Image 1: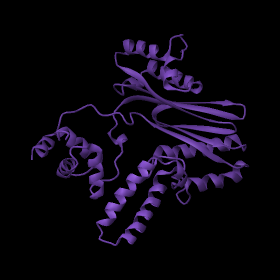
Image 2: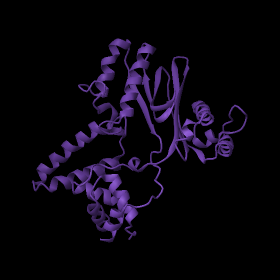
Image 3: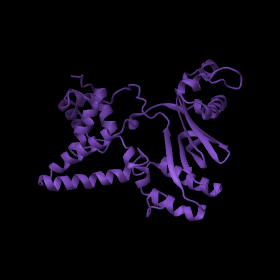
Image 4: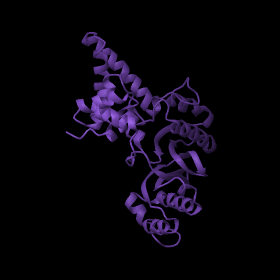
Length: 313
């Protein structure tokens, strides 16, 4: 059994929004298993869905870039981390991240990107090491993503931009179509803004079939446990769960989500409606939502007195 420390109670509280004593009880009931404690709280109706990204804490920049090639296009997003947000406003760092994003258009792995030569001839990894010496703060290339279309556009968007093309959330949206490029670009950017908003929840997949089935099974289990607390018979519970699962799909599957810029339509319906203006069929074939620091655990912080008190109680 993992030790139930004040730090663990505090982290669970921050991740779920549940009360201090409820968090301590959840950890006790699950032998200190953090993820199991989140599920326990959700099943008791004491927490909203919690995601690891809620516990993310890292600074730096996410950068996006795109390049046309014939009738098609390729776009990339990269994340380069630093210790503080001060570095994100450093022009040397910004220039390096922008150049790294350009190199990401032509590589297939983050390892290859780290070894790609930059303008001065040094590989990305070595260039970042040199920047550490100049700026005086640790930094590193964390990840990248790339999308391509043979015909159409890959739209890019940065939310909370520090400078053009660089900020805290980078989005790519791939649209396959032989229609009007400018109008496709406008549609792609609007969908990218929707993806960045992450409302009511960040999209986890493009289509229902692409959802991680372990995630679906976990949600089904939580919904079933919540429904059983109503005391209704199993056949009614089954229908309740299926209804909740359909709602879950509408929240996390991009094509099923209500389009933020036109809530009366789903994203799928908005794409279909745009075909008349674009002048050709449109297929939304992929998207990337890269959030700065997503999935990076926080450094341990000092505990509030109430946390320590609750952990001892």
